[in-house]
Image 1 (cartoon, helix red, strand yellow):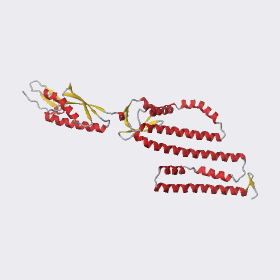
Image 2 (spheres, rainbow, N blue to C red):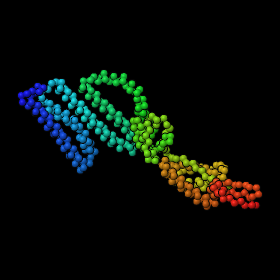
Image 3 (cartoon, rainbow, N blue to C red):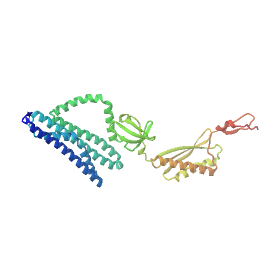
Length: 364
């Protein structure tokens, strides 16, 4: 036991190892004990704060516990200054890393609470909070790294100056990534659309699910998720249907050429009455617009006082059914494709295009 290693006897080393091992297991046991107690408490009385504390306890890194135990064990030894310094630096670095994990968790917890409150009241604020949360985490981890480098003896001031020069080269090498990053900030600040909006971009349409730093994700009507880079997105013409307060609807129909003039004059008023009776719709106009190849065409314009597409289709269906009923009462026939064929020595016969093969000529 009188043998010395690094200036310490075997007995001292035994005490140091024993103290380190005991400390390690005690720390691990204490973490598990606190974890178990908080889990039971959370089951009995659910609380967001208790859940956060439980998550923080579970974030404790086993390597950090090991280094703490190593530091306690080494305190019984008379180690060389260099080795003692290395152990202290390692403990500080892992402590900073542990603080980083805790801080990241706290920021995420705070963001989730704020976003849940704002997502229904003000989606634009929720989107902005998500972006600022990422930047906050990035800044927080940057400070942790700088403190760690400072403790390692690296001149942080010189490093930052060097990063400023090297940042130019990085920016040139990552132009596409940076353009998407700046585009995401343009979307967050300018708010052309928000999470939950229904938008149409070229041939794609759907609800915005997520606005990220590089891409925006859209859930299409057919169910799949469409991912578009932010820079490409801002180059397109975006139609935001969520911000449509009312929908202008134009539709046409044609009636038979044999319809009497008196009935043609009545049709616009009939259409007006039908649309005016619909709740959630505002009549604009109805006109005998043009002569078709086989019909007299009417054009109708009205407004649906909502952006809801399902409501628009419900109203349009009611209008169509009501017009059919009114035209039936008026003895007005909706037109369908017809051709009149003149053959020498025969009376003209009007038949539908689909029934041409069934024509039996009638002699005059």
